[in-house]
Length: 145
Image 1 (cartoon, helix red, strand yellow):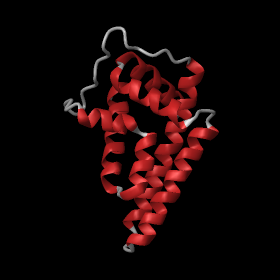
Image 2 (cartoon, rainbow, N blue to C red):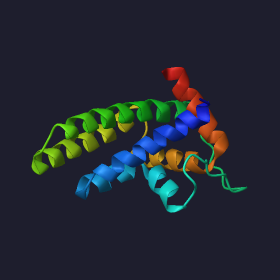
Image 3 (cartoon, rainbow, N blue to C red):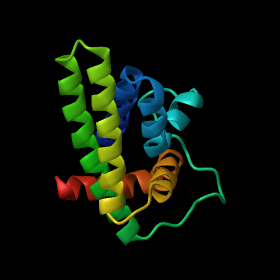
């Protein structure tokens, strides 16, 4: 499987996760992952990356991309743990509490990587629109795993 397909599958997994969330937790987590919403709203065929419009590329340093990759892997781990925990919970209040805790942990993961949430969101949104940036981030993610 190519790096691009792996990266896209990660985003599709993220999209499925957001379908499970409700209420204020969803709003909090959407702040962290605007890229999923952008991808879904455009009607782009699944598995097909969006192409960058000429002249709209934001410039991100390798250090910033490394921080984003670090945060992304932490967020992915938190998300996977939450999915497993939610599968075992029948009580809606407990599920809501778990979602809120996961949202706070995701924000903390972004901040501990050396980024603020807005910068993380900006990079992830740009990744959805820029295939070159997708490849750079996918490469960094593969190096870290």
